[in-house]
Amino acid sequence: MQIIAHRGASGEYPENTLLAFAQALAQGADAIELDVFAVENELIVIHDAKLERTTNGQGSIYQHTLAELASIDAGHGQTIPTLWQVLQLIQNKCWLNIELKGANTLQPLLTLLQRAEIELGFDLQTLLISSFNHPLLNALKAARPAIRTGALTASLPLHYAAFAAELKAEAVHCDAGFIDEKMVKDAKARGLKVYVYTVDSKDELAQMQQLGVDGIFTNYPAQSRQFLGL
Ligand code: G3P
Ligand code: MG
Image (cartoon, rainbow, N blue to C red; front, side, top):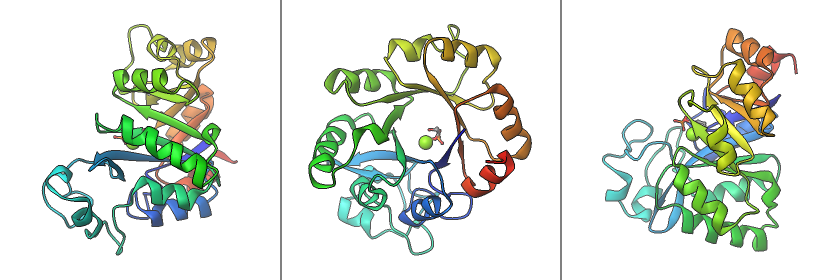
């Protein structure tokens, strides 16, 4: 079972910050999940388009310049990182799930990955790009078929994992509140990995273990590993 640090070790540190990602690595997470938006064609790592919940800034990220966003406090003196900063930190130390939040993220991502492959020796095989925006995933796959994708759903779709297979995804990313045995069976029959968000409690972790999912997104990587007996 893969332990994927959801927004980093975000249960204990400010989510989607370099600190939370460094702590996830220190806690032995197999992977890190993070969320990105594009501002001035640069990918920044933040979950909400609005600044209030996780920072001392105000309003929409799109009302600010990149320089202004870089000066905002995201908690514990951390800043809103750029994806480039995160790639430099991770340096292939674990696999990475980049969740595309903004619709205008595709071109900046393709440009950034090309740079990361050249300058950082970044291995594309350690990457999984996910989104709730399925046309965006489709466009990504068409532009660069070698990039592996994860199809997100916050529902139990009528035809189970068929949508993820149609997207030629590597994995289906399911909401813990909806996933069931049929979904897992269907995904596996289609050769898809099953990753489930967000799983922190002992009971839910045991339930996911019983369902035989391939990985869980958790805010507490070390604790979840311990609960799972890994
Ligand atoms: O990628 C899994 C999970 O992060 C999706 O939901 O809202 O936490 O980004 P959210
Ligand atoms: Mg996410």
